[in-house]
Image (cartoon, rainbow, N blue to C red; front, side):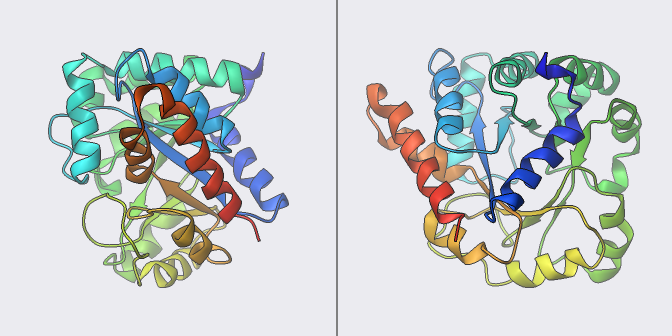
Length: 271
């Protein structure tokens, strides 16, 4: 069974494949349960059909402080539908079994804390989900969660912003696992017309401290920003723009619209 591959190894394999193909890895974020619970599984598979290398499953939360209006609205819809951490893990497990892809949960500290860190690690490992991204958990405050995840070879992906000082990068980046997530700009998530000007410099500063892949996210609105990152980063993370592509389409056309949008990112990721 494909689920024998451990989480961090699955992430490494995805980035290695993209590197061999001389392109950026494409990471796509989708809020579980948006636009509704029944439609979501087909959308997650449409993202993979379009060429996503990694899927980030958004865990809905009532106060997503790092997110802009698009993800906030998606989270509200999912919460009204009753989506839980358990639901997100089940969706991830199904994707791994069917498609043998790396899946990460992206959410905020409170839902994971309520779930219980050891239980979370056990559940993620059982589902072959690769790990978590938690924007409101500083690396300095992650010891308890890391103690639960590390023995299971599960990654907690660190995020670093352009405002991160060099001494903090030097202290924390060498401890990163999976890949390093560089935030392209200061502010919240949301598609932008232009890439944050500080992103290339941040990636260069991060690379001084790690051989792990480096991905850039926040504000990536479409293929133009992806092209800008070729030769700079190893991967690109797109979330709000993917949710926008879903929202703009008629219900019967949502999967096709998302698949086409992700395919445009994948095309832009290659020379």
